Image (cartoon, rainbow, N blue to C red; front, side, top):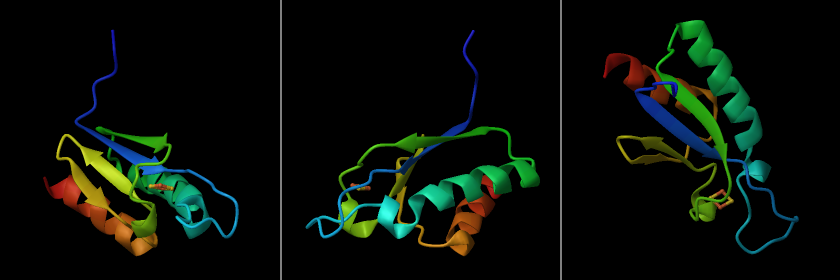
Length: 93
Ligand code: FES
């Protein structure tokens, strides 16, 4: 039996050395944003989303990069307020 979630969001946690030409999402706060999203989803009682770490999603320049399925929606949420907006959209969907 597998768990059933309505949504999955993958948040890039990739880390590259400083000065790398493409940069990385970890250096733009994606690690803390993932922790925040998990905590906030729990506080809001949103149980039908799985919030997962991912490796590079190949949109490094736009990071922190995240993609929500099954919608196939991409985000570059740069702060907690933008994470809150993503969760608010899920709550009202
Ligand atoms: S490092 Fe995050 S998308 Fe590439």
